Length: 441
View 1: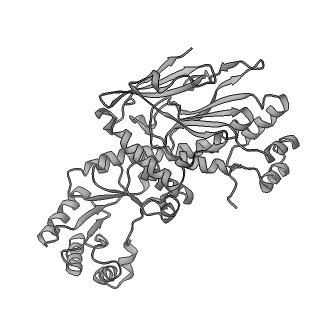
View 2: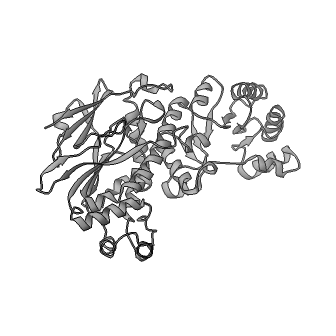
């Protein structure tokens, strides 16, 4: 039996539900929106990730006997609310940006439509997944841009909680990384896995030569040997001596990487190992990768920085009620007006305007109504951004599983080509595209 996700939530969601069931507002049709007010770290774009995971977890958002017993024992909600939760199934609709899509301040990344009772309890689940995964994906995209055509591998599992590590590997792959060291990410999401040996392998053996010979016996000469356990120059010489000039690769995990990489490349070439690749690891982030652009490096392995969002561990997204029916059944826009935390009410449609294939703005069409406010035909020079993810409670299977990850990766790499050149810079700046609101009423 899959594990329930219903208690991966905050208490106030259920106490609001409890009160709404008491006062009769629980069944009011509502529109909730998940969006980010700003881009963390003054970055120029963000990447949507986590959608496929959210759809899978939504399917398991059920209150079983154990969950209901806990709520009853802790007296969190009334008996009437427990009865409601026992039969809870989300039967509403969710539209949103495709996974892998780019987003900007105010982008309506997810629009959740249903009764207040159905939709309000999804806030924490949606935000915990989308905030984490989008933060990792946004950092990973910057690293992928900095790396250019050089391969990137994610290897940060030991720097994250065990399940977060799997989610981070998935998000990094969507944004351009080519492999992960995490086997569960490989099994669950179909991501290519990689890895050979750590320093412990060399330290286990009586000599570095013995360690190299044993690794080659096990994995062949195409393997990558870790050459910086002791002296790097001696490690390079020994690696070629043991494996021959056909050695697949060497890995450097310490030192001043641009200088060390240059020395290692020169030494390998002098020894005739001109085809041996150089992989560097050692606390890389997008800035370190960019600094290595002119160095003779063939591939990168990134750990801590990518799984923690490279200084921005959350995307800062929020989940707000933006439209509801009033007591007469009429639709009204609602919005928070707090200083620095204001939101824009109304149901929204989103488009990305393009000129000669390059994005120029994030166009948001706002309406008080419940129906779709704009169609692609009305904006022929723009690309519609919303797709249907859940319809009448049924999730879109095409966005889930390993196939969904591949589709998200392909979509991301395709739409990243739309970015103007200024969006590719790593320095702090305003968003690369302005967000333009148009009132449809």
